[in-house]
Length: 189
Ligand code: 5GP
Image 1 (cartoon, rainbow, N blue to C red):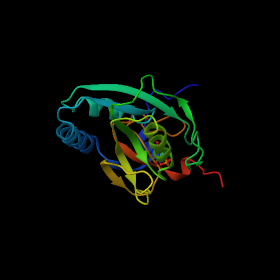
Image 2 (cartoon, rainbow, N blue to C red):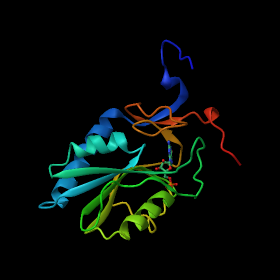
Image 3 (cartoon, helix red, strand yellow):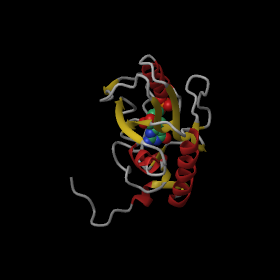
């Protein structure tokens, strides 16, 4: 596939919701809070592929505690922008979580279905503790089913890309979070 010599992703965006500077600031704050909450403990950060990768690597570097990393991949929207409600593990963790202090690192919580599924799955494996750090939580996310212990930003219920989040695998490498122009996608009815 050929790409124009100059890549201009900003032409595809309606609005930047979270700037690069705001991300840097908030990730450092979350790192400080997590470091203080987990004093004397070793943490296992569980990243949800692929969207949480940028956030996880930045967050890990702001945590002043011993940290191990593991990853799981869950089926999500595919190339659509609506949650299907059907959640499936595509890649499971490499390590056991039994007796460990586990912090799930999520890119975005929308309906909360994905997170609720991950929480149920990992809780059954008997970690010493299980908490969630979500970079973005959309208005209307169902907190009872999928509580988020550490929230980066609450955002309006719009489809966003950047800082790990994609649309059909594109835009993950934008260093900020932005709303994609709705005319660039069409939700299946
Ligand atoms: P939920 O199960 O909470 O409805 O959706 C969670 C997953 O859907 C996220 O991990 C992410 O992969 C995807 N998702 C939800 N909202 C958005 C969005 O605004 N933009 C992108 N790129 N993905 C989203």
